[in-house]
Length: 295
Image 1 (cartoon, rainbow, N blue to C red):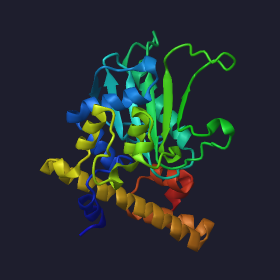
Image 2: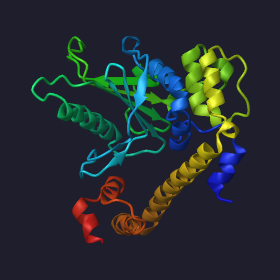
Image 3: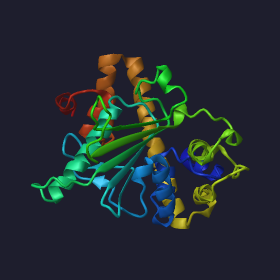
């Protein structure tokens, strides 16, 4: 049996930090209220939402090479505001720039659809759920015990935000230090603990304060999935782990064969596997022209 299938059967709950697990819970319209609760917990108090509709996760032309990209989650609320969630489990160079580019592209897409003369563009809120260090730089004392960071356009001296445009928020779960559920001091910490540890837990932790959190645990129970949802979850897990294995294998092979030669061979293997040129450029650091010459 495939390792991904064995793992998904052995686990009682999904891994919410994986693409497959996150989508199985939060991208299911039946769990829309859980997504609203999640967004409202992460967003600032003055940015709360009451309802939302799911939007397509495939966004044509969002990459640097004008090819389609698939986001982990995308939705809009009743006010027209856009919300994007990306789950990240491995280090990726320029990840912050990637988030800024995606958010800016969707923001500009709103201008293309509306009245270009008025510039009345709906804001974009991008949330990165990070389970690994992506090199943001968290060495100073100001970052001690912090695992939420937010970015937007503001005046440097006063910190004043003139208008709602693009907002990026990172939930850095790898920096969340609570080892035991009972050590969490409020509902937000309980949510972060659940996001980080649900897959390694055999039952709902005792002492859950927020009833909505109980609904999250029920939604994450694999055995409760319908037959169709279970099949999709298993397929997504296999795809995700195949991709992770390709990344790991490529890294190991590159180390053994030397920097220049190794990268070229790995890129060829990715081409043979049908990986798009733009993604190979992103993963290997080669230019588009270098990749084209390897074909």
